[in-house]
Length: 330
Image 1 (spheres, rainbow, N blue to C red):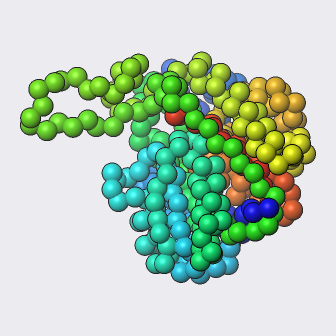
Image 2 (cartoon, one colour; image 1 turned 120 degrees about the vertical axis):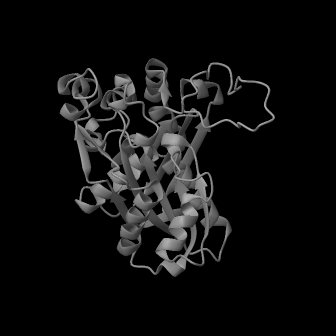
Image 3 (cartoon, rainbow, N blue to C red; image 1 turned 45 degrees about the horizontal axis):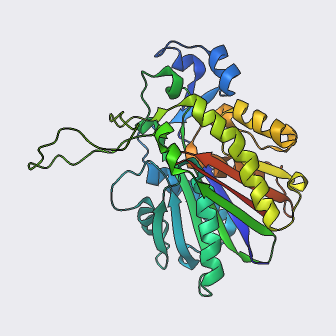
């Protein structure tokens, strides 16, 4: 079996910590309302840190933990929906700053499933390129950039942060499942700037049916996203397990996208898996999109909960709509 070995982890969160009481000062809400519905108690916001520089700080920790030279890295994959630039990619900026001068680099956008998509992409590169030794996977988000702080239903949910891993090829157990349903794109999106060239005669921007909010802020149909997410977690995990004849309930740990505690609890109940097997830290960080899984993973590795030889299931779900799961041995 061709798999991966995760040899280093790292994460970073900005120092600016915003509690639910802080949120109550700017929108009509309170700590009890937020925490009982989402499980979130606080989140971190950038106070000037950019997406790529947060990713760099997480990447430096992962490379240090891996005990390798940056020059040995052959590929940098950076997942984000909040790039600082239309071009260059965050991956190229990290590649330069960390000294991975021999690496190719590109960004990947699969929203909250981005870490799973990126990790599986890393595995496929390692599987097909014998000269590739190490891949650096970075996920970082500045969601405060696209959140409408007048909308109490969404602004309370999201935070900023970054996580990273270094991986190499191995013969360990591995399976993955990736999926997308573009028809659900309209239930969770944020528009980019449309062309304003001097030759335009049409004032309306055609972003697509049902995608009419064009202010650049994140729009979410909460009910539809909830229905999708509670099904996506067990679906993606089960399908990945089926590929290798693995009983998903034998996984030692599930590291889910940290969206909402109610989503995870409902999915776990439908799945028949105890919440004791889920790594949860959304109470401290909120929803950090693609960064949420590697942040939670790094914390659990460093505090000793996750140990070598244990079987893990990473599972993500998000805008696109996308879902994905990876089963691997740590």
